[in-house]
Length: 141
Image 1 (cartoon, rainbow, N blue to C red):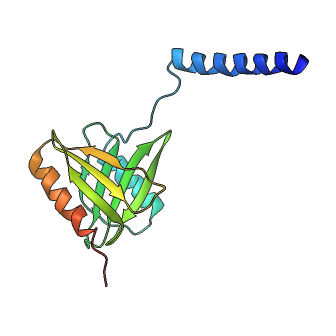
Image 2: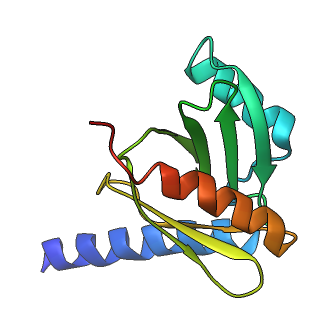
Image 3: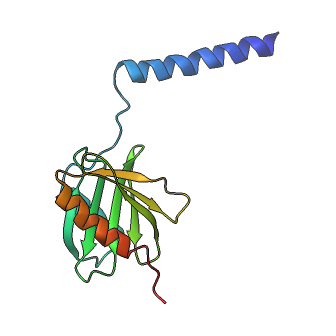
């Protein structure tokens, strides 16, 4: 009986903490404030990455930054309380799909990285990046 009471008190305590955080909005999902922040994060992660063309999604959840040489694309995705970075090289992209409202869904061959959706302002930008990402589907022989 004593164990059951301790278990109930623990469950109540954890539930109270979760509800308090939710009520006071203490848990905010992460985001990428602007392209300068994305480039700074990329530079911190990979010294020497020279940023070229770049785009930030409307919801500030995903950024794509092409390396000047065109060899790779930095993919930054706000997940949880931080930003996850992946470097896309030929063969690392499994699928790229155009959706409605200028959305682009990117799926990597890395099974630990869930598919992300980037929301573009216009179809031409979405198409340009879809073409770049489709080139990353092909592996170099």
